Length: 310
Image (tube, rainbow, N blue to C red; front, side, top):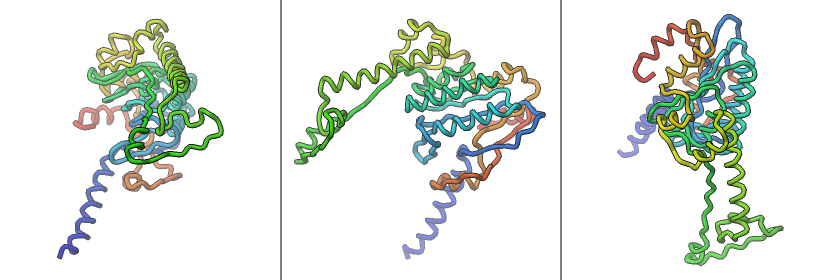
């Protein structure tokens, strides 16, 4: 009798999964045919932990890949219709090198004449703020969590646990410091100095990037960049953001700064068809479909943004 419920349960799970997938933000790959008659404000989502490679959506956590964001930025820079971009950032940070890659591409995109506005969502901290600091204008919500300008490296010394379990790890290495940071032993003073030097160097790079991007003197940045997290309101007081407002305010601001506020359309990079969302939800990879993003004219956009949940 119980076995009869198995197909029903499987079908129910499948239906629920499909509904969730359809409601999820779209994955990567959206492109469109370029014309010559529109003013476009593009939207690029940077959601999840910042890593290299392609973005990876997930059920409980997601990662945003620098390769994918760079591809979207290059698409925008090569399209004469794109006058401005909004980067919608909802990220606690991640890889410093990946944040640097994205920030570098933002600089190239701005050099190509595309104005870029950051819209901070729930969190735009650490590497997320690093990226934001490279844009022309930053808009946060009053309650956005941002800042966290600092670098951390965490290691786990499990040697006592190994002893209690009666485990004796054997390490064979070619040079003395090849297993630096191993969980089988504590760091030596020299190894700790080496790793601290790495962390300090990346922190200096971070502070210098924000100082340049925000036009804040390096001495002042060193006072602010102590790893503290800030609300959007606090960040505004410190000059780390330019204004307070939501996602729709950021789009309007981008159009205003690009002087196209009376005639523009919104294009969402990376939006995909429903069937692609479903397949990506289950881990499938789709390449080369050339699926279109969402393109909204100004009047339609302004009607939609007043709808709850847009």
